[in-house]
Length: 284
Length: 306
Image (cartoon, rainbow over all chains, first blue to last red; front, side):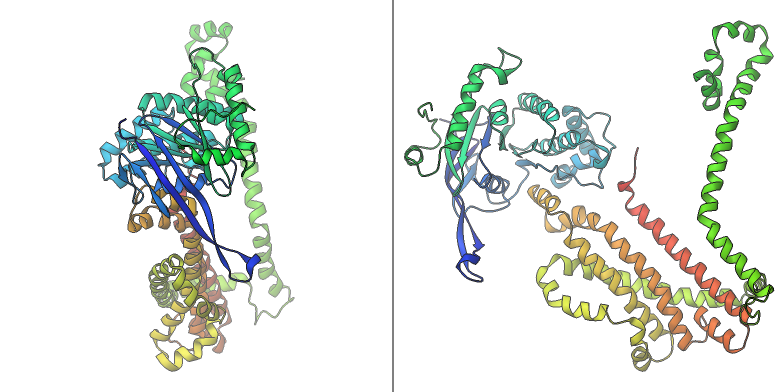
């Protein structure tokens, strides 16, 4: 087996938090992410789904290099991550565009960090704005763009410096349902066009299944990887993959995984099995 | 409607939209070609133009009516004996005095003195307070240490310290400029601190995720994000620079608008005194106008549209 693009090797993350129930100023250790092990092959679109408090955001911060794991390591092409870098691009839920920069200048931010010449930047930003369908909007400021368009700019910005992995933190959660569906299709198109490895974090089961080749299901308190489900849907068969009976079955499987209470034999079993293997739990 | 509207906006496009029936007439009789649409346009444009002029006049009237009434009252009240014309001369006489001061060069002398002091103090304060504010805002430790101290001095009226400044720095230029520096520093410093602190953490996080160095992060994210708020402080500083300077000049100076006012009062040149006050009001309004224009220039991304 070749080196995976991304490997989570027993990643563990603790935070010290204030705990007033144990007296003033008392602090306890809070485990945000517990023994997270997963391989992501190159070119995969992996979705991570889980309830709030399951460590999704911690996972993203770790991936982005904004924090370091308490133990374990995240390897990109076999090299442990030590900090933020242009080998990973991040798309945030709230766009995070610089309001004083035009769409084009926002896309060029990462290219400036890369130290490219003005002409190269302009050429690349034009190409990526075109890729996300925003030709003609280069000179618009973020406040002149709709939510969907802002997120397109953010995607273009994250892709423009050609990262190895694209990290997306609930990028479509703030959009209306219709815009979200459009952007989901756009993302799939962009993913096929660029072949970038994508880790997509969401709390929507449908979104996770619609986009992902595999869905990593997480459980909260402490944040753990519960299972990874292969999404082997025949996407060519139907235009409306969401109403495919197989989609419904997978949806139910993810739902069951998300809702089975922590501490059941189910979880104990999950803990024993290699977590990057696909589990076949009994159909509920 | 289009046939009457388009000639107004684009005379060249007028003939084609004239209804077909008239077309032949128009071409058969060339002189009407240009005239006909123009007439049609005039008929239609007149009400619109009139309405627009009326709207403009209405706006001007609404915004100036109180001012005009005030100036009229100033002119009339002393003349009809409502107030003593010795202590409040009619506006026209004050304006006469203003004209005399201006033409004799006396006004320019005092104005120059005041503006150079205010400008120097203001510039020193802004140049010192912005970097300091950025540092305090960015490093939480520094802020924790300095905040109570700053809070104390911020709430001490600058003019209360005037005697101290005069005792230590003498009655010359230094004490006046120092007072302006003091008064201007706090608005700029405090707004800069809060501007840097309130930069959207997500923007910082997103820039960090790109691996930007601290310096680049500052240059590309923190500073541009802080500019609009900082400018509010700069504008407040501009206003207070004039305010404290005038007061300082009233206490001890040989030139300046504040000096002009007290000097003319003591010598019972009441018209000149009012002329000085008008000059100060005009300076205040212009300083604010200039700073407002600068502020708009620096934060034009907020309203700019292409």
